[in-house]
Length: 330
Image (cartoon, rainbow, N blue to C red; front, side):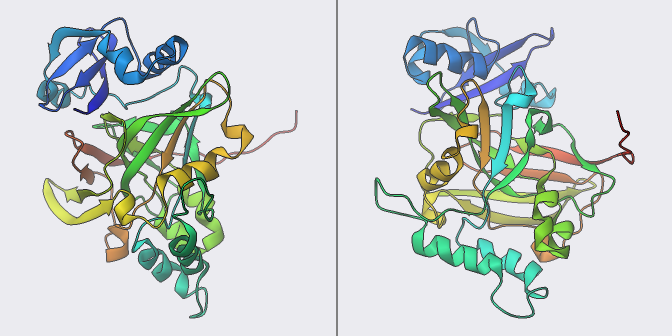
């Protein structure tokens, strides 16, 4: 049996947490309004998240279909102070993930071996070290804080200065830092690590700019280990019809790095081990509609689904206004 947690906004506006079993039955977790609160309770009690949930599980059932239809499913994690939630990620971590990136950067490299391909090859050679050893470090990027998280059904905003807004279907790990400064994994969720690929293609050094965008998180938080082989489907819908779709592969069997290696190279920085903070870390993908010539536009809907997650992640694309910023002396 695997445990999946969801955060819900009830009809009366109150928040709650529910647990979904393998049969798709969702039951309310008593005396709990957030996954963050639940994780802190488990830490304070010196117990596992599964045991903490088991002692609070009620008989009150929730209708998952109704929750989806009324957009009452929230992102699976948040923090009372958005500045204490980090969105970060790693790229070029999946078998085949260098192909699309290499196409974008090969022209600028004059036909030589690109930095993307060098980074990918380093991962192939040293991304899966023996137990207890440290492997090669991956590409790393910062996406934003808790204010940049959207849940399923919510619009993914693309700023008006963006040149592109396209999906990246992947898995994200969700972590809390305990009182002693140790990272503790809460679980995994589906994710759309939304990016501006045209900006990135213009110059590889603009990668940081291309990643500073919102990201969507699937409603379910899978507690425990991620299956080694995860196979899903990524789609772009336009006017209610499928514009593009393609299977995507993730999980360690389809990656050039172990999850443990990616985790080490993120949390080796003391900055990322501040007690009470939440981290959402994206593990990367090899499947992009942009690599196949798809140009998204406002109103398009991104849809990502993959077992073992029961609930799909769906988000419409929306352009948002951004005014010119003029800094004044104090």
